[in-house]
Each structure stands twice: as C-alpha cells, then as structure tokens.
Image (cartoon, rainbow, N blue to C red; front, side, top):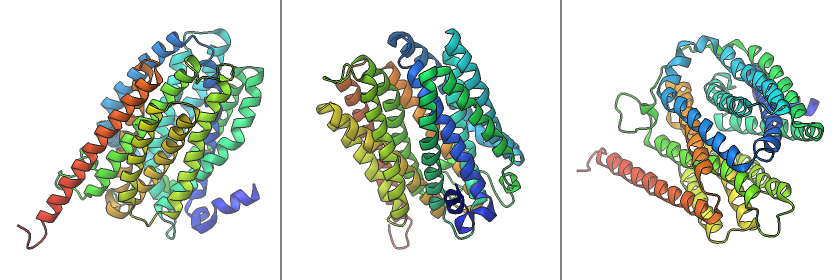
Length: 420
C-alpha cells in the first residue's frame, strides 16, 4: 500500500488531487470486477440461454434509447450542473451500490427484477466513464501529460480488479449474492471517495462548451476541432463496437456452443478468452505510455485495421487460439486506441473546450459499445456467421474512416497558400 500510494502521488499527482481520482478509479474497477464475477454466474450461466438473450436484448435496446436521446443533451446537462461534478460521480457509485444490493436479493429469490437491476448497474458504470472523462483534465499536474494520467488510471483499474476479483470469486463460491453484496460495499466506499474529491473537480474557469456535432464532424465551423481528432474518434467507435459485440456474443456462444473439446470445461474456456482481453488491455496500457509521441493519429487507424484482420482470421479459422487472438487484439486495440485519442485531444483541441470535448466523445464511445453489445445479443449463435458479420462491419467502417481522412487531407491541402 505504501508503494502504491507513493506511485500514485508522484509527479505532482498528490498535490493536484489526481491521486484521489486514481484511488477512486481503483474502487470503480474493484466493484465492476466483483459485479462481473457475479453476472458470469447468474445472467450467463444460471439462466436458460434463450431467456437470458431475450431479456438482455430487450434491456440493451432500452439502454440504447436513452443513450441515443441523451447523447446530444448529456453534455449541456452536465455543464449546467458542472459545479456539482463530484456529486454526479458519486451518484454513479451510489446507483451501483443500491443496484448490486437489489441484484443480490433478486438472485437469491429468483426475482424478475434480475435483468433490470443488472442493466442499471451497467448503465451507471458507463455513466461513470462519461463523468470521469470531464474530470481528469481538471486535476492534471503541470508536469504530467493527459495520456500519462490516463495510463495511470488504467493501471489503477488493473490493480483494483486484481485485488477484488479473487475476493469476489471466493465469495461467489458461497453464493453469487455474496459477491454482489461485496460489490455493493465497494461502490458505497467509492461514493464517499467521490464526494471527497478536490474542489477543483467542480471548477470550470476559462472553459467553453462544444456540442456533440462539433466533436464528430470536422466540417463544422466556429469551433477548432481538428480533423485528426474526428478520425481518431471514429476509429475508437469501431473498436468499442467490437468490444461490446465480443462481450455479449462470446459469453453466450462459448456457453451454448463451446469450442470442440471444451464441452466439459466451459467456465475455463470463457476464462481463457476473457483473460486474453485483460492481457491485451494491459499490453495496450504499457504500449500507450511508450508510444505517446509516435503519431497517435496513425496508431488509431492501425489498431482498427488490426481488429478487422483479427476478426477475419477468427471467422475463417475459429477455434481456441483464434478466439484468444481476437480477444487479445480487441483488448489491446481498445486500450491503445483510447490512449491515442486522449493524446490527440490533448494536442489538437484548445484547452478552453478540451473538457467538454472529452465528455462528448466519451458519451459517443459508450453508445458505440452498447450498439455492439446489442448486435452480439441478437446474432444467431453461429461462431463463423457472427464473426464474419462483425468483420464485415469493421471493414466497412474502416473504409468510411479512410475515406473521411482522405477527404479531410484534400480539403486541408486546398486551403494551403498557392494550392488551387
């Protein structure tokens, strides 16, 4: 604990308040890990597959609706209450604490409120990502870059999940409701930590606001959002769609149609695939710190290409190794793509609108994950069909991204002096 505290407070993070946010993010990851352990034993394994898929599809659809409607409005809503940002973050923890406690009762009593409570926790988790995105720039020490700060946040998440995961797993052996109650206590602690964040979190001095279209359309005038940032955001949207798809599709596929030879070890099979995602995320965090100055605008395109190639490989040669490779590349790509997007926003977006741009972009990325998850749930449980579909979607999206990048470069060249 002393070593971790010394690391989290280094580089001026202790004085700026960033260390408090790192600790809070560790609590967030710890609670999410405990919740994931419980959901793996309830939604995906304890409930009949057809029933679980139907219920999750319904509630993901309901989840998409508020994201789609609120995405253009969430920024202005948070801006109106930005002096209470600490309370906004605290609410996302409090909702999950209550939701996990209610979910524990639903699991124990086989209540029909199982799926609504679970989806409420997942939506609150996504909402935390939106509110945190607007908080990080306000707590940055003068000598620390945004991409390094986000790398530290990712490391804090890994540490929190690594500590919480074994505890939750041990408690789940008694019953899934006990790991849920543990998650509720962790989220309750996070609620207190959120309220105790530094007052700088609520400060918005010198900041201006941008709309959702301003950060997704480089042709908009009157705002200085660089086309490279738009390209990076589009690439990350594709990466999040793949992540959401794999989360839902693989969870049901590996349960109902396990890989040949693994029929009696389905839990281990799922653990290997999920573990590959976690390993890829850790590798992406490490690479993000090392490659922060190596053209992040190129990295985001490269990882999208890699994700599409891995999906094609897994579709043609589906098996344990291709599935693990796809999961590894997806985890690495999502993490490295997000760190590269952060670096571009820090470099290209003016400071006065940077916080607002982060909040808007995070909202769009969360919506992309939900869309991918919805596709994964409604897709027939045929491995190659599902993987060919997601590979086709990624390739089509890559063509769209590259076309937009080429158009943007032609326009930029046309605006240069001496160019007709």
